[in-house]
Length: 185
Image 1 (cartoon, rainbow, N blue to C red):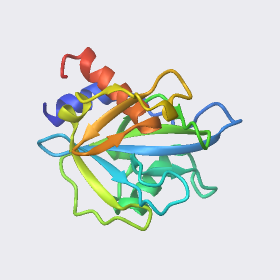
Image 2: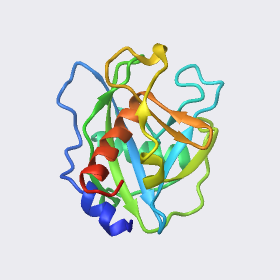
Image 3: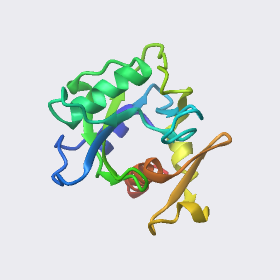
Image 4: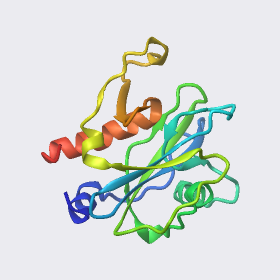
């Protein structure tokens, strides 16, 4: 599938703030790039106190210096993987999801790029993963780990020997649904 098709599928109006002001806010950036439509995700170091060893999208919590959650996603992406995006690179967003442990509301934004420069992880990132989007989205299954069943909607996705679960998997489920509705997976 080409990047133009992905752009059409995932293009939405950008509404960079979540209305629920009782929740802690964060944002992530889903970056899809190149002729193979690869998706960038990161593996967190096992030494972190929160989310150790988890696979996630670049992103983090809103800072007082951010004008909105789109600024948060752009800033965090630059900090974590040295990918500098502009607001014009962002084509849409998905529905927010909430983390189960830290209770952050995460707003996922989507950027589709023709190519990316070499990326450099910061100390919050063990490894940058470049995952072929369509084959990856096809790996979705129900999460069978009883420790993850705090809510009824839990999924996993597999890339090589790495499992993606939790909030990141719920974000990926939204993408898988969009791709499936358009008969791309």
